[in-house]
Length: 400
Image (cartoon, rainbow, N blue to C red; front, side):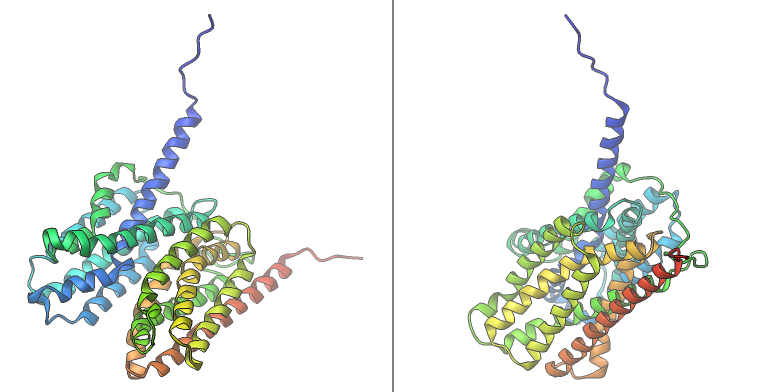
């Protein structure tokens, strides 16, 4: 009788190892993003802890998000390519220490604590993007990671008040938001030790080493103003909703979150099938229509509709922006800069608006938001034009 061979081809082990690394990087993605993704849960915990009543939420948020965005932006330059696992483990440990410190340190030290947490989270998330930039389909993989993060974020935002607070109290929420950091640290051996260097050339036109080409810079500018727009609307949506009438408007946040999940999921399915720049242009135009319609005047149902559209496009466009950057920058270096640019402008947005206009003047706030998304669309269009000119410049000319 013929014996079946029990030897497994070496390629199978290689694929299993690669899939394991991809899953672990997704865990880092969630660990880096989770606290920021459901930041209202963090704020809610602070407002219910008596000894933290005098803490400035605005100062804490600005400190954390600025540190988060800054480290996202510079991590690719400062994290050694051959010490990825060591840096990831160190930053995960800092996240956990900072989360625990929130439960014991005096209020005067909280800003320093959130600076550490934000910076560590930025590096953890940046490592996932450093890995993404070296894959064949970074846009699709980012969409899958984002879908998982949004789903888990919704579940965690529901569990925090329903389970964690009744059992353990509000201080436990800080550690609960760092749960995925605990898991990632426990499984740190699955993190890659090193990553290969990215190519130095930036786009279809020869550029000086380590510099991005004009199309990539313009698209990153579009990303920044789009992040600015997204944050401003998210921060001021609830005050706007409070001026609306009707029962449906009370559920605008739940509807928007559901649409965020759908947007992230559909982008994972469609990012490799649809024309990337057309989708981005249409998405930004719809965002312009959203703010313009609310400025003109909508009822409660209309506001909920636009809140759902906002949620869907907000996560649907993430993968397409990343795909666009890979098309104008074959080195994929701009993909690593993407989250830092988005988060930095997002963190500056509310502070910038509060300096320009009164926060109670919602019409003025929305007008600034409309200008931001319109300029984002202009930057995208400019990036497309420069890309076309670059392609024409390097294309062989016909001779007679």
